[in-house]
Length: 175
Image 1 (cartoon, rainbow, N blue to C red):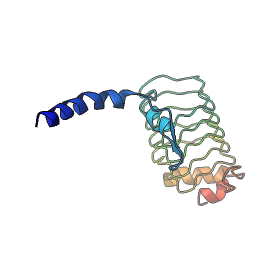
Image 2: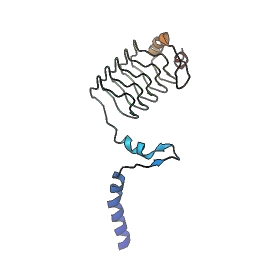
Image 3: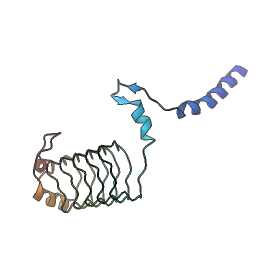
Image 4: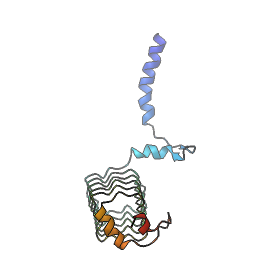
């Protein structure tokens, strides 16, 4: 019994210490690096911050939150924003060209006059968002949840083929 209590105490003491150690190995069987999973917890949270004019180009920002953030004129070109949260953000005149915004939550956000050329917007939730004057040539909106009026307006400017998916912007919007 004493030995069991000793092991339980040791486990209770050591487990939190082991969990705090960064993981730097790769789990290639799952195709996802353990380091990437650990880094998810170390992502910077940009919720309710002012990132106007900031340079995020080519950064890995998967699952990062920009909820309620202001990012006017920010450069997100080529960034990986897969699964990011941009809800109620203000991103007018930002550059998202070539960015991966797939599975992003971007409802009730301002994307007016943004550059979305060749961006991946598959499976995004963008209800209540504004895309007025956005450049969308080559953007892929496959299975995106958009307001009917936004979809109609985007269809007027739908042109090009996404270089990654090979899907036309016109078809991806269901025009």
